[in-house]
Length: 112
Image 1 (tube, rainbow, N blue to C red):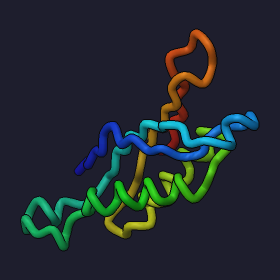
Image 2 (cartoon, rainbow, N blue to C red):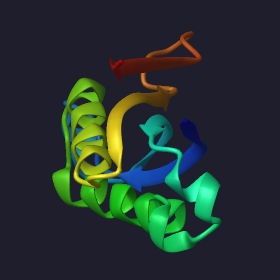
Image 3 (cartoon, one colour):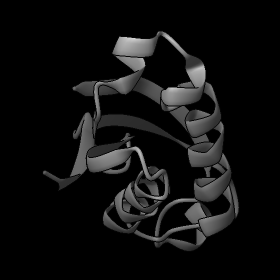
């Protein structure tokens, strides 16, 4: 079964330039997880990946990491997702808007 978290906005330090290291910027995070079917069978939150808890863990990890590159941010997010034993694979997209003049956004994609 796939579980998707779409459009998680995270304000964190991200970037290489000195001005980027001084203030938070917004990242958009999308995650697609492969999980077992147990929660669908039992309808029990205890058998499911709690996406509210996962979203908060992703936010906290990115805020703490203060990554320079969106590629690193994607790995931080993937590591958080894979720490749940119910997750067998994770595909992560991290998008940073407005980093380069005349470029809407840049996205790093990591995982299956």
